[in-house]
Length: 284
Image (tube, rainbow, N blue to C red; front, side, top):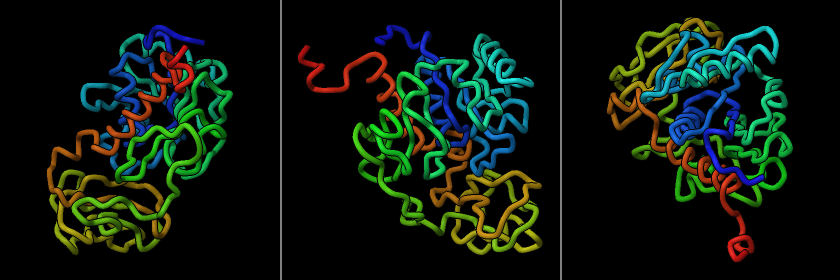
Protein backbone atom coordinates (compact mmCIF):
# COMPACT_ATOMS: atom_id res chain seq x y z
CA UNK A 1 0.00 0.00 0.00
CA UNK A 2 1.41 3.38 -1.04
CA UNK A 3 1.21 5.94 1.77
CA UNK A 4 1.32 9.72 1.58
CA UNK A 5 2.05 10.81 5.14
CA UNK A 6 4.77 10.06 7.68
CA UNK A 7 2.44 11.27 10.44
CA UNK A 8 -0.04 8.52 9.58
CA UNK A 9 2.59 5.78 9.42
CA UNK A 10 3.27 4.26 12.83
CA UNK A 11 6.73 2.79 13.38
CA UNK A 12 7.52 0.32 16.16
CA UNK A 13 11.18 0.03 17.09
CA UNK A 14 12.30 -3.02 19.05
CA UNK A 15 15.03 -1.89 21.41
CA UNK A 16 15.83 1.41 23.07
CA UNK A 17 19.61 1.31 23.44
CA UNK A 18 21.93 4.02 22.16
CA UNK A 19 22.11 2.77 18.56
CA UNK A 20 18.35 2.28 18.46
CA UNK A 21 17.88 5.74 19.97
CA UNK A 22 19.64 7.34 17.02
CA UNK A 23 17.09 5.71 14.72
CA UNK A 24 14.12 6.56 16.96
CA UNK A 25 15.25 10.18 17.18
CA UNK A 26 15.69 10.46 13.40
CA UNK A 27 12.29 8.92 12.62
CA UNK A 28 10.52 11.03 15.24
CA UNK A 29 12.14 14.22 13.93
CA UNK A 30 11.13 13.20 10.39
CA UNK A 31 7.47 13.14 11.45
CA UNK A 32 6.85 9.46 12.15
CA UNK A 33 5.00 8.43 15.31
CA UNK A 34 7.35 5.94 17.00
CA UNK A 35 6.65 3.41 19.75
CA UNK A 36 9.60 1.64 21.40
CA UNK A 37 9.42 -1.85 22.89
CA UNK A 38 11.91 -3.12 25.45
CA UNK A 39 12.60 -5.83 28.00
CA UNK A 40 11.66 -5.13 31.61
CA UNK A 41 15.19 -4.43 32.86
CA UNK A 42 17.31 -3.35 29.88
CA UNK A 43 21.07 -3.06 30.22
CA UNK A 44 22.58 -0.02 28.52
CA UNK A 45 26.14 1.28 28.58
CA UNK A 46 25.54 4.65 26.91
CA UNK A 47 22.62 5.40 29.23
CA UNK A 48 22.66 9.17 28.70
CA UNK A 49 21.62 8.70 25.06
CA UNK A 50 19.36 5.64 25.36
CA UNK A 51 15.59 6.13 25.41
CA UNK A 52 15.23 2.85 27.33
CA UNK A 53 16.78 4.59 30.34
CA UNK A 54 13.37 6.18 31.00
CA UNK A 55 12.17 2.81 32.32
CA UNK A 56 14.43 3.48 35.33
CA UNK A 57 14.38 7.28 35.54
CA UNK A 58 10.78 8.01 34.51
CA UNK A 59 11.81 10.20 31.59
CA UNK A 60 14.80 11.02 29.44
CA UNK A 61 15.47 13.68 26.86
CA UNK A 62 17.95 13.13 24.04
CA UNK A 63 18.73 16.09 21.80
CA UNK A 64 15.34 17.68 22.31
CA UNK A 65 13.22 14.52 22.05
CA UNK A 66 11.59 13.22 25.24
CA UNK A 67 10.79 9.59 26.05
CA UNK A 68 8.65 8.23 28.87
CA UNK A 69 7.37 4.78 29.88
CA UNK A 70 3.94 3.72 28.59
CA UNK A 71 2.63 1.40 31.28
CA UNK A 72 -0.35 -0.91 31.52
CA UNK A 73 -1.36 -4.35 32.72
CA UNK A 74 -2.34 -5.71 29.30
CA UNK A 75 -1.01 -5.17 25.77
CA UNK A 76 -4.11 -3.11 24.94
CA UNK A 77 -3.60 -0.89 27.98
CA UNK A 78 0.07 -0.42 27.10
CA UNK A 79 -0.80 0.50 23.53
CA UNK A 80 -3.43 2.99 24.72
CA UNK A 81 -0.87 4.57 27.06
CA UNK A 82 1.64 4.73 24.21
CA UNK A 83 -0.82 6.48 21.93
CA UNK A 84 -1.61 8.99 24.67
CA UNK A 85 2.08 9.85 24.99
CA UNK A 86 2.42 10.19 21.22
CA UNK A 87 -0.41 12.72 21.33
CA UNK A 88 1.72 14.73 23.78
CA UNK A 89 4.71 14.67 21.43
CA UNK A 90 6.57 12.14 23.57
CA UNK A 91 8.24 8.89 22.49
CA UNK A 92 6.60 6.03 24.45
CA UNK A 93 8.69 3.12 25.69
CA UNK A 94 6.69 -0.05 26.38
CA UNK A 95 7.87 -3.08 28.34
CA UNK A 96 6.92 -5.72 25.78
CA UNK A 97 9.71 -8.26 25.18
CA UNK A 98 7.41 -10.58 23.22
CA UNK A 99 6.07 -7.84 20.94
CA UNK A 100 2.46 -8.37 21.96
CA UNK A 101 1.42 -4.86 20.97
CA UNK A 102 2.64 -5.28 17.38
CA UNK A 103 -0.42 -7.09 15.96
CA UNK A 104 -2.70 -4.74 17.90
CA UNK A 105 -0.95 -1.59 16.65
CA UNK A 106 -0.60 -2.80 13.04
CA UNK A 107 2.41 -0.57 12.35
CA UNK A 108 3.39 0.60 8.90
CA UNK A 109 7.01 -0.23 9.74
CA UNK A 110 8.80 -2.40 12.27
CA UNK A 111 12.49 -1.91 13.05
CA UNK A 112 14.46 -4.58 14.90
CA UNK A 113 17.15 -2.57 16.68
CA UNK A 114 17.84 -5.06 19.47
CA UNK A 115 21.32 -5.82 18.08
CA UNK A 116 21.30 -9.35 19.47
CA UNK A 117 23.42 -10.54 16.50
CA UNK A 118 20.61 -12.99 15.71
CA UNK A 119 16.92 -12.91 14.90
CA UNK A 120 14.85 -13.26 18.07
CA UNK A 121 11.51 -13.53 16.31
CA UNK A 122 11.16 -10.69 13.80
CA UNK A 123 9.15 -11.62 10.69
CA UNK A 124 8.48 -9.88 7.40
CA UNK A 125 4.71 -10.23 7.81
CA UNK A 126 4.61 -8.07 10.98
CA UNK A 127 4.43 -4.76 9.08
CA UNK A 128 4.31 -3.31 5.59
CA UNK A 129 8.06 -2.81 5.83
CA UNK A 130 10.37 -4.56 8.26
CA UNK A 131 13.92 -3.26 8.74
CA UNK A 132 16.59 -5.00 10.81
CA UNK A 133 19.93 -3.69 12.05
CA UNK A 134 23.20 -5.52 11.75
CA UNK A 135 24.28 -9.16 11.65
CA UNK A 136 21.90 -12.06 12.16
CA UNK A 137 19.42 -10.94 9.52
CA UNK A 138 19.10 -11.44 5.78
CA UNK A 139 17.15 -9.03 3.60
CA UNK A 140 14.42 -10.87 1.75
CA UNK A 141 14.29 -13.60 4.42
CA UNK A 142 14.03 -11.96 7.86
CA UNK A 143 13.29 -8.39 6.80
CA UNK A 144 12.59 -6.31 3.72
CA UNK A 145 15.83 -4.43 4.34
CA UNK A 146 18.88 -4.77 6.57
CA UNK A 147 21.04 -1.80 7.57
CA UNK A 148 24.79 -2.28 7.99
CA UNK A 149 26.05 -1.47 11.50
CA UNK A 150 29.75 -2.32 11.15
CA UNK A 151 32.02 0.73 11.17
CA UNK A 152 33.73 1.31 7.85
CA UNK A 153 32.90 2.09 4.25
CA UNK A 154 29.44 0.47 4.29
CA UNK A 155 28.17 1.78 7.64
CA UNK A 156 24.50 2.71 7.24
CA UNK A 157 24.14 1.03 3.84
CA UNK A 158 20.66 -0.33 3.04
CA UNK A 159 20.87 -3.99 2.04
CA UNK A 160 17.94 -5.30 -0.01
CA UNK A 161 19.26 -8.80 -0.69
CA UNK A 162 21.28 -10.90 1.71
CA UNK A 163 22.86 -10.33 5.13
CA UNK A 164 24.88 -7.63 6.82
CA UNK A 165 28.54 -8.26 7.57
CA UNK A 166 28.99 -11.05 10.14
CA UNK A 167 29.78 -10.15 13.72
CA UNK A 168 33.54 -10.16 14.33
CA UNK A 169 33.35 -9.60 18.06
CA UNK A 170 35.76 -6.68 17.66
CA UNK A 171 34.34 -3.14 17.85
CA UNK A 172 35.20 -0.68 15.11
CA UNK A 173 38.29 1.46 15.69
CA UNK A 174 38.14 4.95 17.17
CA UNK A 175 41.51 6.69 16.87
CA UNK A 176 43.07 3.26 16.37
CA UNK A 177 41.57 1.67 19.51
CA UNK A 178 39.14 -1.27 19.31
CA UNK A 179 38.74 -3.69 22.22
CA UNK A 180 40.89 -1.43 24.40
CA UNK A 181 37.98 1.02 24.55
CA UNK A 182 35.74 -1.49 26.31
CA UNK A 183 35.43 -1.99 30.05
CA UNK A 184 34.69 -5.60 30.98
CA UNK A 185 34.15 -7.27 34.32
CA UNK A 186 36.75 -9.77 35.52
CA UNK A 187 34.29 -11.33 37.99
CA UNK A 188 30.56 -11.73 38.46
CA UNK A 189 28.53 -9.78 40.97
CA UNK A 190 26.91 -6.44 41.71
CA UNK A 191 28.25 -3.43 39.83
CA UNK A 192 29.51 -0.52 41.94
CA UNK A 193 30.60 2.60 40.05
CA UNK A 194 33.63 4.62 41.08
CA UNK A 195 33.46 7.13 38.23
CA UNK A 196 30.55 8.69 36.37
CA UNK A 197 29.72 9.08 32.69
CA UNK A 198 31.55 12.16 31.43
CA UNK A 199 34.53 11.78 33.78
CA UNK A 200 38.06 11.96 32.42
CA UNK A 201 39.90 8.69 33.15
CA UNK A 202 43.52 7.62 32.78
CA UNK A 203 44.94 4.30 31.66
CA UNK A 204 44.89 1.86 34.58
CA UNK A 205 42.37 3.88 36.59
CA UNK A 206 39.60 1.95 38.34
CA UNK A 207 36.17 3.08 37.15
CA UNK A 208 34.05 0.56 39.05
CA UNK A 209 33.89 -2.78 40.83
CA UNK A 210 32.13 -6.05 40.11
CA UNK A 211 32.11 -8.70 42.81
CA UNK A 212 34.79 -6.71 44.64
CA UNK A 213 37.13 -6.78 41.62
CA UNK A 214 38.12 -3.46 40.09
CA UNK A 215 37.29 -2.67 36.47
CA UNK A 216 40.13 -0.56 35.05
CA UNK A 217 40.40 1.61 31.96
CA UNK A 218 42.84 0.29 29.37
CA UNK A 219 43.24 3.68 27.70
CA UNK A 220 42.91 7.34 28.66
CA UNK A 221 39.87 9.31 27.60
CA UNK A 222 36.34 10.24 28.58
CA UNK A 223 34.07 7.67 30.22
CA UNK A 224 31.36 7.65 27.56
CA UNK A 225 29.20 4.89 28.99
CA UNK A 226 28.69 2.92 32.20
CA UNK A 227 25.96 0.51 33.28
CA UNK A 228 23.61 1.34 36.15
CA UNK A 229 24.70 0.92 39.73
CA UNK A 230 23.44 -2.27 41.37
CA UNK A 231 23.10 -4.40 38.25
CA UNK A 232 24.08 -8.04 38.63
CA UNK A 233 26.89 -8.56 36.12
CA UNK A 234 28.33 -11.83 34.79
CA UNK A 235 32.07 -12.26 34.31
CA UNK A 236 33.37 -10.79 31.06
CA UNK A 237 30.35 -8.50 30.60
CA UNK A 238 30.76 -5.08 29.00
CA UNK A 239 30.10 -2.51 31.72
CA UNK A 240 31.35 0.64 30.02
CA UNK A 241 33.47 2.26 27.34
CA UNK A 242 36.12 4.94 27.10
CA UNK A 243 36.23 7.40 24.21
CA UNK A 244 39.84 8.32 23.35
CA UNK A 245 38.65 11.48 21.55
CA UNK A 246 38.09 12.85 25.08
CA UNK A 247 35.25 15.22 24.19
CA UNK A 248 32.79 15.27 27.07
CA UNK A 249 29.88 16.45 24.90
CA UNK A 250 30.03 13.14 23.03
CA UNK A 251 28.63 11.48 26.17
CA UNK A 252 25.35 13.36 25.85
CA UNK A 253 24.76 13.39 22.09
CA UNK A 254 23.93 10.78 19.48
CA UNK A 255 27.05 9.22 17.97
CA UNK A 256 28.24 9.38 14.38
CA UNK A 257 27.60 5.65 14.03
CA UNK A 258 24.05 5.93 15.35
CA UNK A 259 23.29 8.77 12.95
CA UNK A 260 24.65 6.82 9.98
CA UNK A 261 22.53 3.79 10.84
CA UNK A 262 19.49 6.01 11.42
CA UNK A 263 19.88 7.45 7.95
CA UNK A 264 19.83 3.96 6.49
CA UNK A 265 16.67 3.06 8.40
CA UNK A 266 14.89 6.24 7.29
CA UNK A 267 15.97 5.60 3.70
CA UNK A 268 14.64 2.03 3.79
CA UNK A 269 11.30 3.03 5.28
CA UNK A 270 10.83 5.90 2.83
CA UNK A 271 11.81 3.64 -0.04
CA UNK A 272 9.21 1.00 0.75
CA UNK A 273 6.38 3.16 2.08
CA UNK A 274 6.58 6.19 -0.19
CA UNK A 275 8.95 5.53 -3.07
CA UNK A 276 10.24 2.84 -5.37
CA UNK A 277 12.81 0.17 -4.68
CA UNK A 278 13.70 -1.31 -8.05
CA UNK A 279 14.94 -0.07 -11.41
CA UNK A 280 11.90 -1.65 -13.07
CA UNK A 281 9.53 0.44 -10.94
CA UNK A 282 11.40 3.62 -11.83
CA UNK A 283 10.60 3.11 -15.51
CA UNK A 284 6.84 2.74 -14.94
